[in-house]
Amino acid sequence: MNDFKFVKCFSIDPRVRRKQQGSFALLCGGDPNLIQSRSKMAGAGGDESLYPIAVLIDELRNEDVQRTRTELLPFLTDTIYDEDEVLLALAEQLGSFTVLVGGPEFVHCLLPPLESLATVEETVVRDKAVDSLRKISQEHSPVDLEVHFVPLVKRLASGDWFTSRTSACGLFSVCYPRVSSNVKAEIRQHFRTLCSDDTPMVRRAAASKLGEFAKDSVRLLAVEAGVSIATLLPQEDLEALVMPTLRQAAEDKSWRVRYMVADKFSELQKAVGPEITKNDLVPAFQSLLKDCEAEVRAAAANKVKVFCENLPEDSRETIIMTHILPCVKELVSDTNQHVKSALASVIMGLSTILGKDNTVEHLLPLFLAQLKDECPEVRLNIISNLDCVNEVIGIRQLSQSLLPAIVELAEDAKWRVRLAIIEYMPLLAGQLGVEFFDEKLNSLCMAWLIDHVYAIREAATCNLMKLVEKFGAEWAQNTIVPKVLGMANDANYLHRMTTLFCINALSEACGQEITTKHMLPVVLKMATDQVANVRFNVAKSLQKIGPVLESSALEAEVKPVLEKLATDQDMDVKYFAQEAMSASDQNDMNE
Image (cartoon, rainbow, N blue to C red; front, side, top):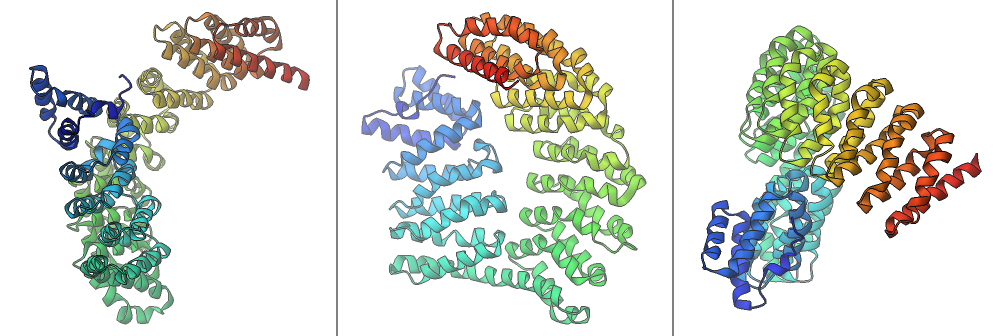
């Protein structure tokens, strides 16, 4: 794709630009069919001014999401125009951009443009920006909330203009329940300051949100305090003094309070002991797993393994099979992907608690169902925890369902999903064994080397190195090295460069003999490649593999090639060749 500068899409004519900006804001989050209709209009002699915008959005929808994060969002942040209709559309659409920036992991990228919109003069724009910020706050992890979202709230709360401070008032309650105690204290102090602000509009905004913030926060504090107090009181006082409050909190009308109970459940379980756990906490945990709010169910699902581990040993299996497992089975098919993903990250751990027979009969069908889940994160979380099942029943019983799930993830349209499965491949290879790997997964690993995303090719190279370390140099010589060296003749120079990167990574693991006899001749041959990028990477590779090579090969074969590259017409080739020669001379002196 050509390097598309966003600003070039917009006309210098204010009237045309206004129309373009409005279309841009609407198309960013609108129906893809609109893009086609706009393109057809332009192509049919209609409104030509909208054509570049339609092309831009179409490219953004079909390109890697990284471009949206690195180019589109900074552009929107730096180009906040004064057309209220455009700003209102942007403020609304950015609240639905999570998928377009790569999912919850990157949702914080949406904060800068929304922060700018939350400070504008027009009230309806600010209110819409705050609505979008509140919406995406729920998609931040607790860590990301503290690192990215809370600093935004603080900046708005201490802004010079009253517009930013009024916007801040609506954001305290959405981040408060999920941050640490120290951060909670800072948030309360900022809200207290806004309540006594010099500007009446700010005080009015703070007062309007006081009920929302204070009611929940008081009960949230009660949950935290209840857990802390429970650790200090003797067992006989817990039932009378602490449990009534915690029972009410588990059924509180505010989802934030119930979320806090779910989040603190393992600490509470340890504090109250086995009897209260059996009588009170088991029913409460069931309710949280069935909660009407997805955030609460996800928080409870995250605690399933820990909760089950800490149950009284004499009744653990009965409680799990009778009370917990039925809820878990429902969560496997939950409508919310965050709930399913949270469960998938811990459910495999139940196999070590329940043992082989129960795992095969009750858990295995759930694992298989999650391996076929439409959400990539669910499948990844199951695959990343396979070692738990491998210890109990062996991985062979999962292998037939495992393979299709791995293949789907390996070919997923989102490159970060592909990247994640690559990182788990050495673990899978060790558990499945070399025969199964060669038969079913080897071709996948080689296909990643020619992926169109550089990060995937880089990870695939590291993956090969780890596989060689696991399966040995002889396996590499017979299975991997011939295929890697074959890519040196590929028509695509990026693939030829990948050959060099693989040689750099594999040389040490494969050893001196394989590197000198099989890899070195290919590297030397590539020194005459027509593409300068390949030639200077040859110089870098010779420097990298030099310490592994036989000394006779260094003197007789490597040095002459480097000397020739040092006279290359390309400056970069010359530079890296001279660097490699200097490194070689330094090694000779050290010896």
